[in-house]
Amino acid sequence: MSESRTQVAIVGAGPAGLMLSHLLHLRGIESVVLEARSREDIEATIRAGVLEQNTVDLMVETGVGDRLKAEGYEHHGVEFRFGGRGHRIAFDELVGRAVTVYPQHEVNKDLIARRLADGGDIRFGVSDVQVHDHLTDRPYLTYTDPQGDPQRLEALLVAGCDGSRTSTRGLIPEPQIRTDHFRQYPFAWLGILAEAPRSSEELIYARHERGFALVSTRTADVQRHYLQVDPDDDIANWSDDRIWSELHARVDGEGAEIKDGRIFEKSILQFRSFVCEPMQHGNLFLAGDAAHTVPPTGAKGLNLAVADVFVLARSMDEYLARGDRARLDGYTEEVLPRVWRAQHFSWWMSSMLHTHPGNSPFDNKRQDAELDAVTRSVAGRTLIAEQYTGWPLV
Image 1 (cartoon, rainbow, N blue to C red):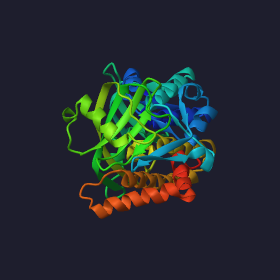
Image 2 (cartoon, helix red, strand yellow):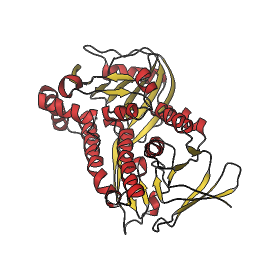
Image 3 (cartoon, rainbow, N blue to C red):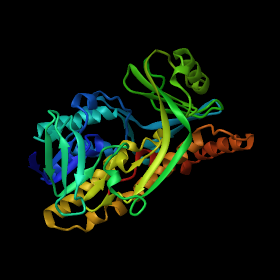
């Protein structure tokens, strides 16, 4: 078995793992990233991305924001539609901030390119990754490399950034140490990618008696739209004609009209919220989807991952450079309040905008009144703008 050493071993080359490796490098800390997928698979997996102002600023300030600034679409507001009319939440006027639509796989491309240009060590295509002795000061990982040879990687700290299907989370005993908080929502999203002109310059969140719809853009020629569907629905039930008909029914009206095109991808996305506490155990630290997931309504997933590793990189630096472990030991306490705020915002957006199974006429009227109250009030619109564009990184 071949052996190697590093300061921080990172499991997973998604946004959390790659950004952590990048931020550690800028602080002079060595890391190795272990990833089961190939580079080509990671860069080809299409994922939506709405980046908060703080995420954009961090990418630009740390040298991985050139393509983001050149190709991303900066949005200064969103539109809530209900009752056949649009109600704009003007981020720039309310909080002086914006969000940028830039797909997650493009973020991954930028981070991979920068890490490799900086001499970073990303080991793609590995398998059977296992973390050992994370409760000691000499944890190590074993894995099989792409050639089928066993490998051992020794480290001082381990970061579990391996997504919602994580293996590293299981190293925190449940229920003795770990508590899992889970919520399954009674609806799902049918998402499409289509070659079509833009239907709107900004995202549209539409509430309709037939169900929720989201209108978003990927590029000038590729659009990403979503429809609320039953969690048990089958994608085979949705022909292209039915999808476009339903989008028109839920969105079209005063000031808005869906523009059709050729659908080249469609899938159904389940709605779940999840948080595990704590996000650390010994010298193992979880970040991103390995520790928490949110419904996509609030556009918080990637941004939470970046916020986690921003704190984690600084905490690891204080320990590795100065021997001060206080902030590292307090990692969970520092990041969880933000995680729960994001959970609340995502739940609130979902509950306001979706049609709930079993709703009475009273419930539907109350939902409409809530949206009316929020969009009519400067305070309500400001609250949406503050939370949507993101809280400061601390």
